[in-house]
Image (cartoon, rainbow, N blue to C red; front, side):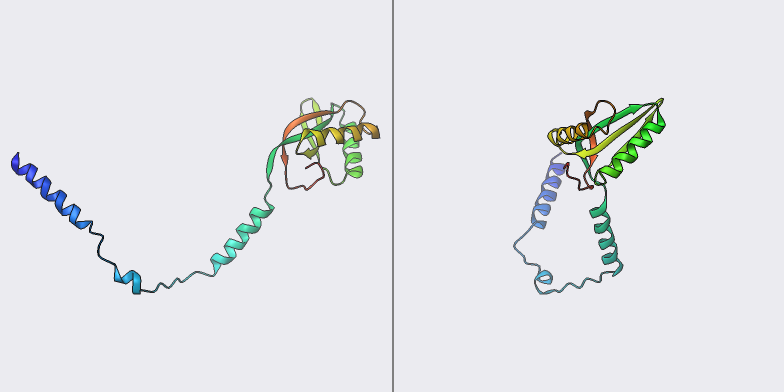
Length: 146
């Protein structure tokens, strides 16, 4: 047992001696470093940066539910009217059998959605009620609702 403990003590003292930090590594002080970079990496970096700049970004926001109907012709007609009258806004059409839903715009806050709702009601373009609904919106459109 004594030999085992003395062996452990010798190992510890050797490991502590190996950690001597008083010596300075002269290769680091006097050496030079040459980096050979593949030129294709620069092209790849630029492509990745441009992709990230144009990638769709989304956040919590609001849209206007303008129509919920099973009449396809009415939905397509209203969609085209909205796109003609407000080309800077997006119209989102979804089909959940048997209904077609039209949602309009990408608004960052509820107040801007309410203002646009009032504008749509004054134009009498929408045949029924308009509801402000929370949605995940597209931030890359650059529309006035943001």
